[in-house]
Image (cartoon, rainbow, N blue to C red; front, side, top):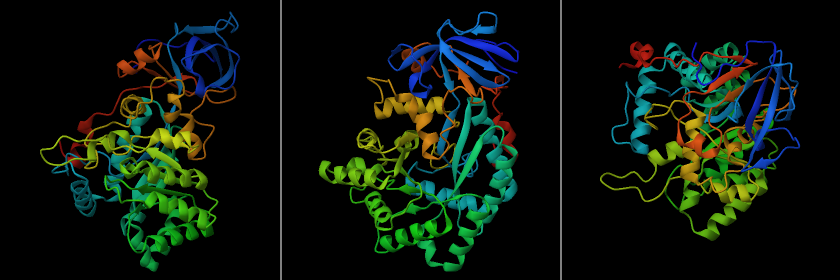
Length: 437
C-alpha cells in the first residue's frame, strides 16, 4: 500500500486537524476564508464526516492527524471522458495529431478490435487509474454506431455494477446525428440507452438537416425521459454555430431535461457580438458547458509546420459570468484524440488554471473539478465536504495555491469512507497483450 506524506489514524473515529479546504467545496461554516481557502478540523466517525469545526475546536481526546495546514479536497468528478477509447495509442496512433487523423484512427481501431473483452480490459485499467488519483464520479461517452452500441453499453453496465462502491459511473451514447435517419438503428440505440440507464448524445455539425436532427433528438429524449450530452463545435471554424442551434432547439421544444455541451471551441473564434448572443441563448436554455482544456489544446489549430495561434478552448469565463453551469474534464486518455493523460483531475485542474486563466483570483477555481461537475450530472452529493457525507477525501501536503499548482501532488493520500486506499497505479505492461507495448 502506498501513502506518503501522512498516515491518518486507523481508527473508527478521528480528526483531520488544521486542514485547509477550498471553501467552495465546504458546507457553510463560520471561519475565516483567505483566497478561497478555509482552515478547519474534520471529524470522521465510522467512515462518515461527523462534523466540521473551526481549526482547533475538535474534541481533544479524539485520535488525530495534524495536517499542518495541508489541503483536503473532496473526491473529484470527471464528467466528460471516453473510457471505451482509452489506451489504444500503442495499437493505433494518430499519424499527424489532427482531428481527422484521430477520427480515422479510432474508426479503424474500433472496427478491428473493440470486442467486449478488449473494451472491458481498457475500461478497467482507466478506472483503476482514476480511483487511485481520487475520483469518485465519472461520465463517459461511448461510441455507439452499430453494432458497437450494444457491445460497449453491455460492458459498461457490468463495470458500473462492479465499481458502484468506488466510482459512480454514467454513460452517454456518442453517434453522428445523421444516423437517426435509420429509424431501425435509432430505435434500437434508444432501447439500449434506456435498458442501461444512459443518456442521448451525439456529435453535432452544421448542415441542412441540423434543425430536424436536433428536434428529433430532443423530442425523443423528452418521450423517453432521457438527458442529453452533446459534442459541440469542436473546431476552429468561425461558421460552426451548432451551440446556438442547440440552445434554440431546447427552447423551441421546451425540453425540460438536462442538456450538456462539451468543447464549444468555435465560440472563441467568433466576433464578440455573435458570441455574446450565443452565450445569452445558452444561459436562457439552461445548457451546461464542459471545457476540455488538455484535449482542445492538443487538437485545435494544429497544422503541419505551423505554431498554433490560439488555445483551442471555449469562452469559459464569459459563459460562467452569464450564469451558465461550467466545469472542466479529462476527455480522452492515450488515444488518437489525445496522446497523453491519466484521468487525473489534479492534472486537469492544474492545466485548466493555466490554459483558461482561472487564477487571479483562484477563490472559486476548485469548483470546476468538484461541486460544479457533480451538480451538472445530477449528483450534488458528490464533490463536496459536508457533515453526514462519506469521508471520501483527498489529502495534500500543499498548503496554499502556489504549492498546490506547482507540483503534481504525487504524494497525495486518498481516503474512501475514512480509510486510506492503495494508490498504486496499474502498470502499462498489463495492456501489452491487448494494445501492444
